[in-house]
Every structure is written in structure tokens, then in C-alpha cells.
Length: 252
Image 1 (cartoon, rainbow, N blue to C red):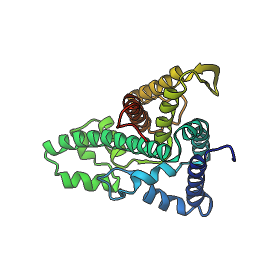
Image 2 (cartoon, one colour):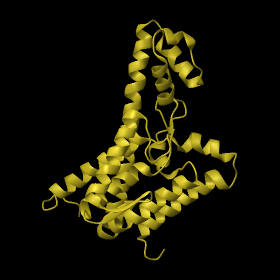
Image 3 (cartoon, one colour):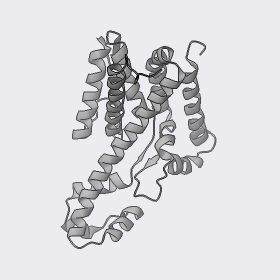
Image 4 (tube, rainbow, N blue to C red):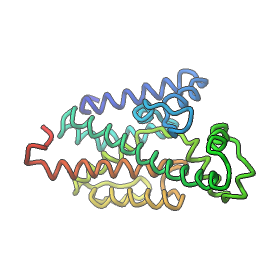
């Protein structure tokens, strides 16, 4: 651990403490911790503004946290060594926030569009929200919207998101910017690929998964939209920093 930059080490420890506190100490705490600290839809009673930050340190299981912390160590360490603590933590948190906001925006668009259909058909908005909040299906809605829309409505309104993956995707993009010729490979496809090709392919696969629902190398309940949001945020920050690296707007 001595070779790991302090900020990366501290982030790994914080994630481990959150995981231990919500999963290992007492199994009964898991549901309470998820309700309080995972990211929920803003229209849901379980939403809290602090969840935009805390969800980054929560994980759904040992494999989830293991792969995320491995990625943070592998790709975050060279960035933290190059940038220093303040610049790295700014970038990491910004990518995580960007991932959350993109996911929430997509959910909002889905919920709003389908809710408006129901309201136009004569259902009151308050009754729709009340039924969504109770997580009970309304068979009366099936005369207005399709089953897939109904499932999308409930899923988007009652979703919860945990994990550092959004922030990690921003880190991946930054790594590809700064070390484009570094060779990487997937465990199930052990062929070295340069980072400048590897990272775009990973993001492309997540984009396909988000559009089709088909998962290539992640569980089906993965927040693919958040991955794309983290990658996009990381790209925008890196583009801005590169463009302004020689003027007064550069990071000092």
C-alpha cells in the first residue's frame, strides 16, 4: 500500500468502511443504509440531496467493490501521482456527480413523459405519484400505456444506484487522455489493447447496453447511463484542461 498515492489509498479505505458498515457488521443495516445513502429518484420520498455524494461510496456486494477499487488503484494511482491530491479528488468527485446527474436526467425524462400520458388520459398527477411511491401497479394504467412503459415508469421512479463506477469511468477517460499508448486488456479477452482504443470501446459497449438492455460484461442491473455520464464528464474536464493548459484558466 505504500506505493499507492495517499488520496487513492484514502478513497479505497473510505469505500471499504462504507461497505463494512452496511454489509459486514449487521445484515439488518443493509436495507437502512441503502435507503439513506444510495441514490434515489428525486421525486421519491427516499431521495436526499446528500445521496449525490454518498452513493459513490456504497456498493452492492463484494465483487462490485473489489472491481471498482481495483480499477481505482490501477488507473487512479498514476493520475494522482501526476496531478496531486486536490486536482485528483476534484476530478474524481466531479465525474461521480456528472454520472449521477446524467442518470437522474434520463430517469426524469422517462418518468415525466409517461406520467404526462397518464395525466392527459385523466389520471391526476398526485395519484400517479402516490401509486409509484407505494410500488403498486395500477391495472387501470394499462389502457393508456404499454406494459414496457409501465415497467420503465416503475423502474425509473423506484431505482436506487450505488457504486464508484461513474467516477471510475471518468478516471478511465483521463487515463486514456494522458497515457494513450498504455496497453490494457480484459480478463476474458487477454489481448493487449492501447488505452486510446480500449476505453472508447468499453464506453461504446456500455452505450449499446444502455440502448438495448443487453449486458456484455456487467450484471443486467448495472447503471450503464451513469457509466456514460461519468465518461462524458471526464472527457469534458480533460478537454477543458488540455485546451487551457497554457493560459490563466489552467489548474494550478
